Image 1 (spheres, rainbow over the protein chains, first blue to last red):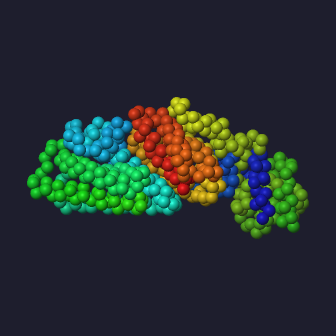
Image 2: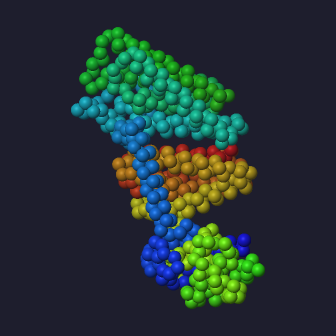
Image 3: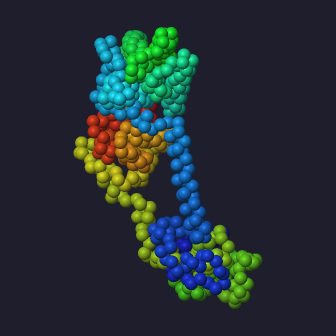
Length: 293
Length: 256
């Protein structure tokens, strides 16, 4: 209809009119606005004049205020629910890292055989953050290693001319599912063995995420030196990782007072640790062999 | 007849500043003609309708209310129309797009060796980043890959992850808009890379070297700005690495 097309042009001209007095024919609340030029924020009104004109002012303003309050309430609810499941402070502990720690930890993951002291340090029964204690687990390295693995997988597939952006998502979700299953299996094992330990879910997540460093090294070696290089690197990183996990988990599960509990329980814990360690090479091979054909 | 009158009114560009009483009178008349059966209007409005010739219907009478019954028009608070047409702020200023600022931020990004001050990202401006994302998508399109969706999706998810990571790693929090703004500005070298990729393939040794160089450039700029904005000491490499991963995703799209 013609008046729609002329709407924009006329709207601007419409604004040249001064505010009229309340017309006597119709008596409603909008009359209160008529003499208030500051009733609207001026730039907002200019940009959004069409919205204002469309909806009728006092109702529109109330609706907008209500909508924004609903939005902030929604955000608060999301934050509250998130904080119920994930304690941000506990999570921040795992990210309190610095460059020196990361460098040393990466070296430890590749060559753990000469490291002497595997005990975690505590101050007043609270574990020291990774910044101050090399043996403390962190989540920065596993997260970065995971994403690097996904990128490397994309690169390797691209070199094999099998790349498309969907493949990235496929690799990422596959690896994520394997990680989740491993953590769940470990949790189940710990629960069934009624092992009372200091290991929370984030600890387990961290330790199972360290294998991605080994995966990355294997894939890079495979890409640079071919299939033989891949198997050599696989063997080396698997053994290093198994050693690292056994040594770390044995001392990490002890807690600040170094008391492990009764002997059968300790044996169960040992078996669990060994099982977790033995699983690592399998999963490393499973997730990387198709990249270095 | 009223339809023809409407058409005429649309082209009536002149003479829009009229007496207000007359205007409201004509408004009601215009709508009285269009909505002849508006019972909600007071009946007095209908009476003069027949006596007003069409050429007295002015353009302003159609202002504002194509979707509302005309009865609201008169009672509509016109307080926002206190600004004259000439006194409106320009469109770019209203939208908050300041080309000078965008240019300055771009220059800061292009020189990663110059130390940045932390105040540069106080105003989170998403116009530049979105422009660069569109430019990246356009250059990819010219190379034969219509991957706009992946560019936007990856930048959104990457910004979200980096925002989470920076909030966890630093003591002072950072807002999502700031992260998105910084990452978007530092995407500019990637746009340069993908425009080069139109002309020659990046899969050789030279291509790999240039890709790595560009990724380092992008991530150094981004981490430099983050470090100065969040005052995290001893962690520049730790911040640079996730940024490098983020830009590596785009490099993957560009190369393969």
